[in-house]
Length: 194
Image (tube, rainbow, N blue to C red):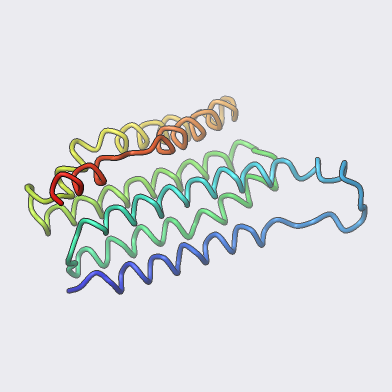
């Protein structure tokens, strides 16, 4: 099967996810002073972090599908699995922000991030299996160390939310920063093969 529909559908779902998140940002209606926006800092901060995460997934998904040329049923379902967990980000984001980073919402946010990481790893693994160990994607992914480190950080952050929420928050930010560092493996391999 060709990959065009999976890319278009994924792009649409991710755009809707971002739209849902931004619609959760409620403006203060009772007052009209700039200082009144300070009360919204937890909601805004959780939105920014989640926007970055969704952007990271979109960017990596785009890069990954740039170097594959076909999909199969298993890949379609693995992509749906990833999109399901991505679609849970707005819920976890809103709960975390509206409850000022309380332990349970912070743990649920970490669980959603962990499930996204695992779903992305499954999708990547199935694409590599479908294209072969010598494929461009396989060469670019390598050991997948960033993904493994991310999942370990999420798994640590979940119980830490009940010890001190800022440990969890720091781990979530750390993982986002790790992924924000541009990963040029796919671009470099395409340049070498081109």
